Amino acid sequence: MAENDQDDKTEAPSQKRLDDARAKGDVPRSTEINSWFILSGAAFTISIMGGSGAKLTGFWEQAGHFSASKVEMSRLSGDFFLTLVDFLTLPFAIAVTAAAIGPLLQHIPTPSLEHLMPKMSRVSPAAGLARVLGKGAVAQVIKSVAKLAIVGSIVTLAMWSERQRLAMLPDMELSAILDVARAALMHILIAVLSIHAFVAGGDYLFQWFSWHKRLMMSRQDLKDEFKQQEGSPEVKNKLRQLRRNFARRTMMSKVPKATVVIANPTHFAVALQYDEGMRAPVCVAKGVDVLALRIRKLAEEHDVPVIEDRPLARSLYKLVEVDGQIPLDLYKPVAEIIGYVMRLRQRRAAPRRERRVSEP
Image (cartoon, rainbow, N blue to C red; front, side, top):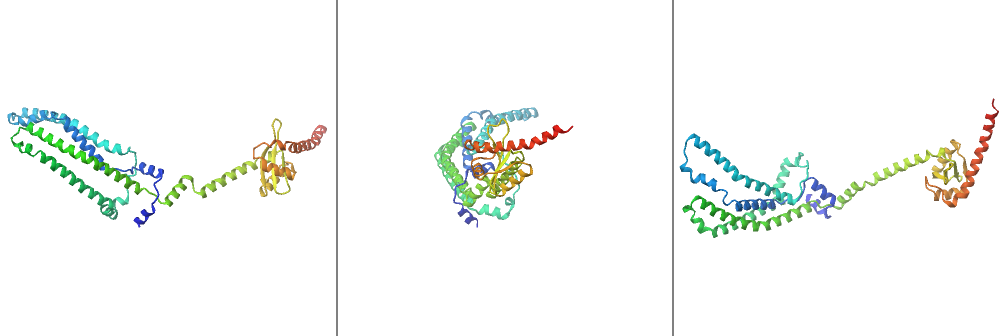
């Protein structure tokens, strides 16, 4: 089943999938690169500390001349400890630096709690058996055996070339033995590092391609990711519907403040508003069919005049957007209607003024 799923993953991983993997700490890692830098640090340490151990070896060479008194032993212990600390400080610093360079060159660490969260796959016997017997484990074993054979051959060749000097070690002083050992060790490390550089480079490429292949996606994965990023059509339609409903409620709330509604008998209705100081009338609402009937009904409920003009209603509905001014071509017919509405309001208002004046 897993192999079939992997066969379906024929598409290159998207940038989002790669970024998500890196954010979780899932990145290609080569332990061989880390080992190469650690070996390089060891070789560098040995090369610069040729005479640093002279004082330390002096303790061993002069061991038979020290007094066994309590005071002398206490002093020697303190001197030996300080000398040992001084001798190991630089190698320790170099080792820590070398161990950190390898991972930093491969990827920048990112804080992630993903690996700290408990997972049943980590304690599952079946998952553990799959890791032990899987392709990755077999490849790791083959790589380790090959590396051991290569390194063993290099060490054998390097030691074989130094066999005559090594045979003379029993007759040498301790300082000379250390010099010979350092030279032989440097010879071995240089040879190992030269070959290991190719091993580390090849292993990193193998790890990168394995990581990339593991993150490959199927066409369905790409579609699902696109839906997550862009939003599913159902959600987008729902949001669009909500926006339309909100805009419609806002538009209908302006109808009672309109100056006039221009309509044909049933199909179109356009509510216009005009106040003194405005450059041109503004469309505050418009609709067709059912919405047009609602606009007319709402206008009648609030005593907004409804004027039926079939051609003008159609033109206004087609050419004017809500909250937009009417076009210049329609100024004259609209002005005539608004003028008529204004005169009608004045005539209606005149009796009211007369009644107020006549009242004592």
